[in-house]
Each structure stands twice: as structure tokens, then as C-alpha cells.
Length: 205
Image (cartoon, rainbow, N blue to C red; front, side):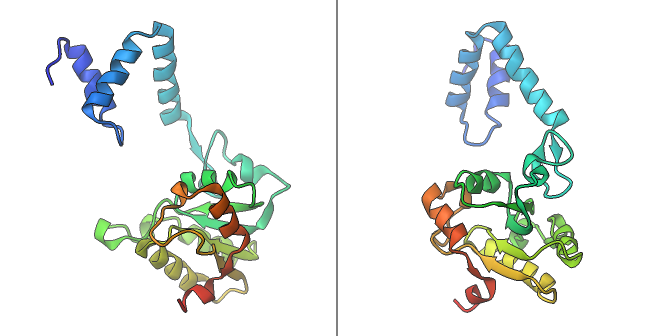
């Protein structure tokens, strides 16, 4: 792809680093920004800088937040003894959009995947076990994607906390095996939360 401007080429190269953005789409976006008022482009650039430099992670659940404690964990109307274990913030957003869940979350930051070099120590598993061990959790809902990595992570966590007197459940398999949570439709995801089953039952399948 030939460019008449090195500045344009650099902009296209940077935009193309974004996931799902090819060179042609990056060029279209760069030309769109070029035709916008300078204030619009400056506002976008500043918003991205602020996102990177000022965003925080909730001290309780690891969700992204503008403060030390996210809005969900700070809400006294949520059931703080009911904890839903998810992979990342996109899953929190997906579940929240169902309006079916009134507990809180624990974000692992990924799934155990030896082939990708991701082990338990790279995830927020130890902090989850600590949360369970101090008696602040009555029920743990495993809501990871129905993949081999998700099931492996569920099973690993279950083995870490099974000695504690808490209920463990998993979202119902209304979510197809192999599906990522963030792409599930809201009705199916909502029903999976409401119709969750004891985690031990899922081990028999």
C-alpha cells in the first residue's frame, strides 16, 4: 500500500495494531480522523491516554474502575457473599447486561492454558482462594467459557477451595460448548446464570 504522506502511513500502522483492524480499515479510519475538526481528534487521543494512565483495577474483584473499588463492589444492594468467577471484564459486561445477576464478581484475567504458557500463577486465583478461605463467600459461580481451558480452570479452582464449606455452581449449559461468554445472547446467558447447577454435577458430564 503506497502512501503519499509518511504521517498518514504512521497513523495507519498504529491503528492497524488494533485487533480486527486491517490496513484498509485503518486507512479509512485515519482519513476519517483527518477530516474531523482537530478538537475531535485531540479529544480521542486524550481519552486513550487517560484510559491507559488513569484506569484502575478494583482491589476486591479486579474489574476496571475509575476508583480503588468498582461500582459493583461498592454497591450495598449487591449480594457480596455470591461471587461469580469470570475470565475478564467483557464477561462482567455480558452478565450485567442480562439484569439477572445481583452478586459480585472475581475476574481471573484469563484461563489456564499451558500451550500459551498461562498457568495458575499468572491468574488471580490465589486472591480468590484467600477470599473464600476468610469466610466471606457463601457461593462461588463458575462462569468461564465452555472450552477445554475454561473447564480446566474451573476444575483447578474447585480443587483449591473444595475443603471450604461453600456452595459451588456453574452456569447452565445453555451456553454452547466452545462458546465465549461475551458472544452469547443475553437471554441464554441470563438463563444460564439463573439456572446454574452445582459444580460437582458438571464433573459427571
